[in-house]
Amino acid sequence: MTIGAVLVGLALLVPIASIVLRPLVRGARLDEVTPERNTPLRPEPILVALRDLDFDHQTGKVAQEDYARARAELLARAAQAMAQNPDASLEDVLEERVKEIRRRLDQAEPPASCAQCGDRLLPGDRFCSRCGNPLTNTCPWCGKNAGAEDRYCVECGRQLHPEAAPVP
Image 1: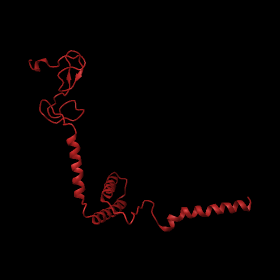
Image 2 (image 1 turned 30 degrees about the vertical axis):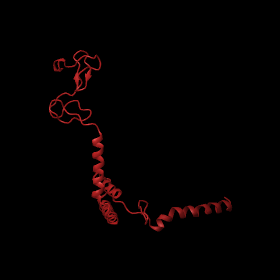
Image 3 (image 1 turned 90 degrees about the horizontal axis):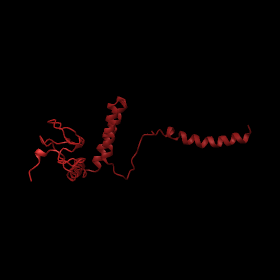
Image 4 (image 1 turned 90 degrees about the vertical axis):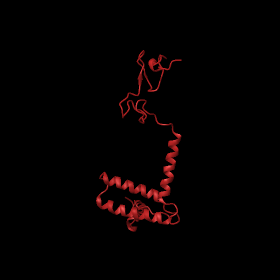
């Protein structure tokens, strides 16, 4: 090996080593996130992180010692975020989310109900969970399944329950 190759190798080794060793020398952790000083903390992301931490601890992904320390840090950050912005309380945020969910439910089509007992039906139900009433009709002529409130078969066009039909 020539002296030039050794010098080039050393010249490349020094900047690479300084970049790799910088976090170790300063003592910074890779998972540590520091918020900018001018941006206010928001409690919602912190509370989501707290929920995720609790779930990870319950499933055994986080050790007890790490869990206690991380939970205390997150609770302190959440309290700090709530103290920084007392006007937007968590109750106001939750109330706004409840209103949004109610608006969506009002815009959705009304839930189906059982023709026999009136209990609420969920999409995909084939039987009523309260009375056991089958929610599909079977055409007596062609055997095709029809909806619970269908009066005529979509396959053959015949009336499904002629005895229940009103007389014209």
